Image (cartoon, rainbow, N blue to C red; front, side):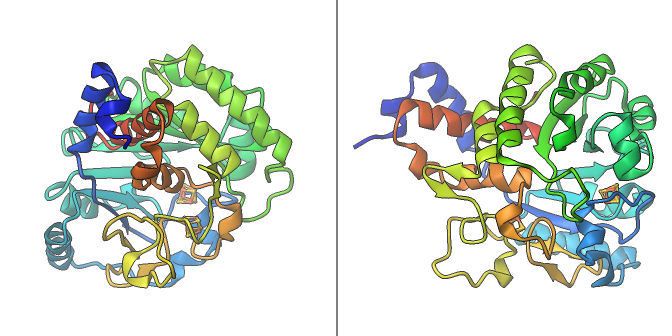
Length: 332
Ligand code: SF4
Ligand code: SF4
């Protein structure tokens, strides 16, 4: 029988041992229904998720809620919205109690005297031209000043089909401000013309992402297996989609048979009572979903299937390490 130790040499086994202890249990929280941008293709607004709940305004209730989440076994709070930095006190309710990650568009700086080591993921949708078309603003011009040299921040670069051939320019700009970058693909939830992926474009961007990882290994946080999974939507001959997705809210998950999934995962709306279907758009057609975290988690929860060959298991380890770095469970 193939086992982890029979497939790995000492170096890889030590890497495996480090991550196998982590036992990451994440959930996602909408901090607010508001944002200081309105990006075309934002899954939150395009699916009407900003209208399903009224924001919890009471700090004590929020703190009690986070304590209950901790009791539920959550050890990673992922804050999204809307724009969480519009509500620093709400961020603090999580940060004071749990390892916390904050997604932001980077226009407002998270004060480091208040949140010294909170990991911040700054969204970026391409070069200044693409950002102006999709987001109405060149956000990098602002966010790069706010987070220059910040060791606890990285850019979450959402690549669109229009970025093919242009990613190096962006990666170099990010490297220039001394921040890491992780790449994912746009799902184009609002069907903006020219921003939906064609099969040959996905092949092109996969090789471009591989190239960026090879050329900028100290700046790009990624793995080639992740690039393969996210561009093909295939893993071990299976196709990503509703019946495979690991990031469905547990109490709403009535799939039969239930696939391997994130333990106790819930995505909470801003009232901290309502639950959303999954980690991303409530209304997205799962067959078009390119959500990066859902694809990473898909690999991570399917460890047993990767105990097949040395390369398969190394691929699994690399994806797990990438996730653990992005949420600060292991250092860069
Ligand atoms: S910054 Fe983020 S939350 Fe705000 S509109 Fe854009 S994608 Fe949506
Ligand atoms: S939209 Fe994506 S993340 Fe949500 S259930 Fe479908 S496949 Fe999963």
